[in-house]
Length: 318
Image (tube, rainbow, N blue to C red):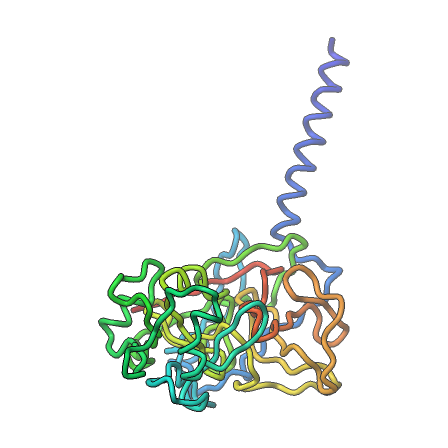
């Protein structure tokens, strides 16, 4: 009887140890994967509110030294916009871009006029009899159209929110200085993926189902960005418009950091070759940069697919 009890106790202890070990594996840096610390000097200082601070913050129960970065998400290297043309006769220079099934399209007046054919749905008609296009023209109209449940008054509209509507909005990013690689990937919420060196947020995929269900279109500008009420100006695509840090080899340049501290690099290298052996999140590792991500193609509506590090936090103050 005593022998049986000892065997049972041993089995329970082994199970407990394995269970705790599994939990620790989720929260512990995998030392077999090289990691490289975040370089705060890459950020454009004029686009940062105050200074980049260092703080110890608990992330997933692990006390982590982080950079705390606050911005107002306003790009400086390029003009923000344009997005929607005003007449079906206007060309692509007066408008932004849209994407469908991996391809990028110029949102010219001609494109707007033929959305019924493009989507094979006769309910699409974003223009009036005189050829003028229905565009959101105020903060009130932006708030009514740029949300999952688009108000009926703004169905069949080209949705355009301006950066000035939310210029006083700030976003604070808490990013681990030394990223901690996890074998198990995790999805990100709607808070954001990370940020470019100009302080503009990289966002998860645009909610195209909600947008198209109301027969609306919310174009990105040629730089891959647009504006919504809960994040201001932000990017859904990487098009090469923002600050890049060239690499000493042929590798693609780094364009920003994910919220877990791992670098996000452009898709193609200097020889226009695509990266190989990317994992489920769009990342891989090399001897110089350690683990890092590569941004997806602009038409894919997906900058990176998930995270392989313990994520920091993104907080928006409106």
